[in-house]
Image: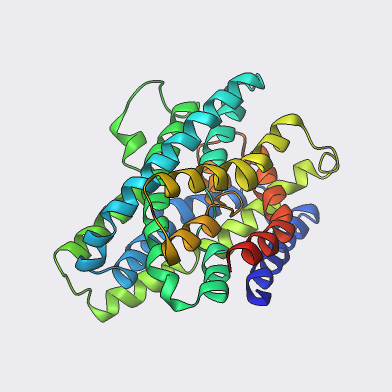
Length: 306
């Protein structure tokens, strides 16, 4: 549990570096835009390929189909609730889209991984990565499409460019590598590993930098932000609980899925929002706020499920 909470502390320390550099004007004004492009087009796809290729095999992919179906239903229900709440709070344009995406997807790896390992050990990792696979695919397809559609950089309506995000392409490549048992050459695997390792630190720097614009507003929590917190830490685990009971999922799978459903907002939301120029400061605030609150909720849920 200490290691899990340490991950949250690490997040805020890296946040603070981005925040400090922006406050003190220690890097150019367009730095966050450049970093977001690196993450979206290079680092995140590389991470998707290496994560799937390293943690899945053909047997696990086939065995995970039942759980993937449950997690897909869970994700779609969350997304539907997010859309309803965004409409009820009268959020407009970009904020509405950011709210929906943030409400739907959670931080399954950077916080979810260490906490699950501490609470359940290595045995729970196959279930965690099953959850991660649906999050990864959903975020880089549905999430990326929504943000692209809300962006002034793209025309409204459907476009293959909006759905075929670099991250989703990385997911597909990773799945194909596993399905056809392709061995990635050591050199290329190392390159992908180094590039993928950039994802988390660069993402956190961008979030910290964007928080500068919300410095004065952080103490004042708005209704939509309260709803995001309720979504992450109450509604999400409740829906997961009901689905797991409905489909009679028990044991370690039940515990891992439940704990992972209580994780804070997906940090890549703020990166995609920055990349598509859609309310990136608002996205950063939601990510940071939910990550801060999880310092209190993680020990509670871990105690109940451990």
